[in-house]
Length: 237
Ligand code: SF4
Image 1 (cartoon, rainbow, N blue to C red):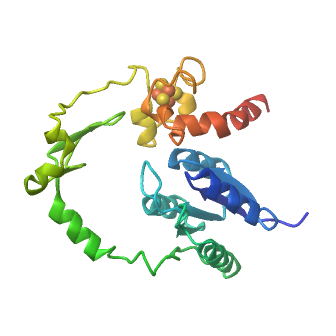
Image 2: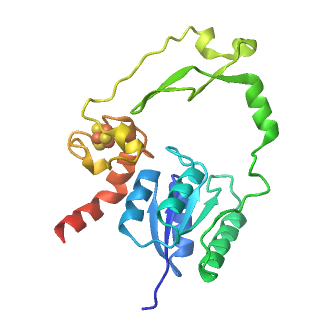
Image 3: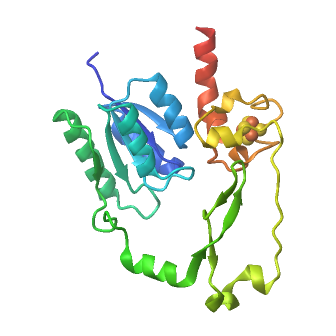
């Protein structure tokens, strides 16, 4: 059996992930991850040559994750691709071609296939509109992470008529996770879902206890669906 380079498709869109897996499986060993936490776990355990990543991963941006990969696995080819629903299939094919070229030429670089829409400086017009309508909040509480200063937006006074928080006088209500929940550490990449005592016992898809499980794209939900069988195989070996 000839050596097949390994690809880790990091994409929280299951359909895009599956489409890429089907396209690549003849020529590559394919791993898939629906979250950056799962992708990190795979990177630590497997010898991965190529990492195509959705630009819009939920926990940290796809490009930020690719930078992490660059730091830790210098020889791994990385590419940011637009794997959301509107993406043209030609973009995906072009991205795969660029990946194959990197492998064949022994390169490992971050490349942007979607340059007609995503430039290094971003969409200046959209940024100006966002700055006109929104301003930074002094602080915002994120489930699992706690309060982080200047980490969220609110609507400026000039547009208060469009602000549901003000129109309907919605007060802020903090929702605490279970004290044993390790979501904060998992979201920061310090722990894995299986390090949580509640994983798969108290905290299941039917009884979600923390923010990493509530969303089907959360790290614990993704690991429960895709990663735990591999964990079981590894501990049995
Ligand atoms: S398994 Fe549940 S309780 Fe544990 S870290 Fe994940 S979401 Fe939190």
